[in-house]
Length: 332
Image (cartoon, rainbow, N blue to C red; front, side, top):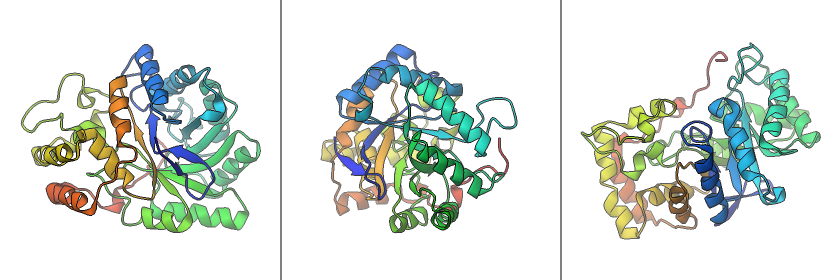
């Protein structure tokens, strides 16, 4: 396993991180989740990403139990706040009240005194940005949070936050967590250049495009039983990629992966890690063998010719529009 700095901070993260969106507390049983976490640890992963909203807060509980007994200082534990965790009007968003209550709930479920990175899971259009950033800064000063970041914020929103932090003397953002893969490159035009200039890293989710880039979804055929596409929690994210044009082009990546001695998943994860602004690629798993396969992408170098072949194969099905990074106008 290789490691990279998170932004301009001194924090090192494993360039493959383990995430439990959809899986823990919902798609897989707890024993299987523990086995996946153990496999991640055995393979050198030290960075674990979750969120309060995953599986209705159950995912944090499962991760907390799975990591119990592991030396805390050897881990980087990330979580997030924004999406609803209850029925009340203040059980969502980035207000001082919700952030404060949410972080305490996350710490309790994760069985830890602090989280290494606390992330705003979307931009909150109903809370002054100063309020959110001041609350984050307070949590850093209290030692409950070591670093702060965001997820799925666009370049303008990140820029606003950095300006306020600099003017008010708040702790600066060190990271953004966007969707990023061979098929979904919407951060490249605006977010990545801004982040490189301002010292933020990307911690990317869905580098395998919800499994599409493994090649297991075949054109003209229904999704395999038990796959992400058939799961109610994750099916909505993958449905837009399940068309024959995308799936046919993905099948044409197989010779490229084979020539490199890589699995399709390894090629997909290695591809996102070629971007120097990416600090870590988050993988999810329902089986330990998936973890063991994915981590072999760490340290893989793809030359310019390979990257061009990938671009030529995928062509027009790649999404690049930066306007696709969207937060709700009103809290859900």
